Amino acid sequence: MKNIHVGFLLSYDYEKLKLAIPPVYDGADRIFIAFDENFNTWSGNKFEVDPSFFKWIEEFDVDNKIEFYKDNFYIPTLNAIQNDTRERHLLGLKMGIGNWLIQVDSDEYFIDFARFVKELRKYDSYLDNPEKHPIQFAGFHINLYKYLEDGLLYVNKPTKLLLATNYPNYKNAKNTKERIIYHDTFILHEGLARTEEELELKLANWGHMHEINMTFLDKWKMANKDNYHTIKDVFYLDPGIWKELGYLPSKSLADLKELVAKDENLQLSKTKLFFKNFGQWFKHSKIKKPGYKPYYEKYFND
Image 1 (spheres, helix red, strand yellow):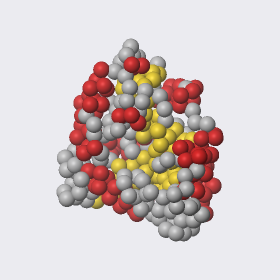
Image 2: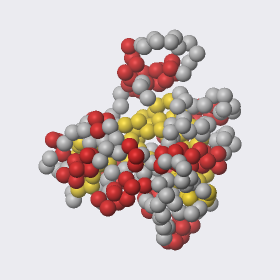
Image 3: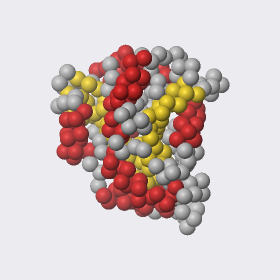
Image 4: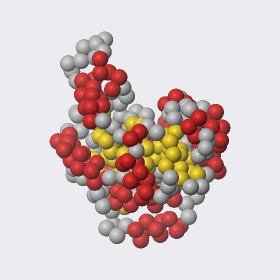
């Protein structure tokens, strides 16, 4: 036990796993890929997987780390986000309580997985009685917004991303509602950076489909290298969460890792991380007093 287990969900965008798996492969003790036994999405739509993908897994998995997990992950009486949460819970149980349970989506690419694992290992004592001391770890998304001919648009501020837990009592997707430890781990998120056809397919099957503010799609379609600085509030749920866009002069994932490291808008101060982590400790500690709101609360809102 006390291994590093990474779980992925396989669905209509399974081809992106060819980019998401390699960055975590060396640092993971075991990798699990969950998919619905009837090839249903969380919304009940059918998807197909080309046999060549399974062939790729077989050839890539030189250390025999990867395990497929098939089950019934579509319950018609549940909505998409409920099916999402249920699948993540079942996957977490399959991955094994007593290990670090890291769940990554197919369009999320670690920039430095080894560094994140090193941070997790500092908290291995939380794996001894995880049910009594549940905890979760968060990194930060670099949200890729739209690919252009000579580069891409991105959201110019990082956003919180829940990555790992010691106990998979998920309440909403990957959120267990337990204490969060923040670490300045960055994940490239290709959520909206797709062709228009791919984006519409994602929206039709996504866990948050019932919450989508479709006005965001008009902004996405019109955004380009010349006008991106005039387009504001571009998030697909509550628009104001993503306030502004930036531009990076490359579409190569290798180049993006270097560009992200140099972009001042995407850096996180140690002070901010300290207050976010202290605030989470205080919020979930027994010494918190009802109604008390410390001055640094703005740093650690969930």
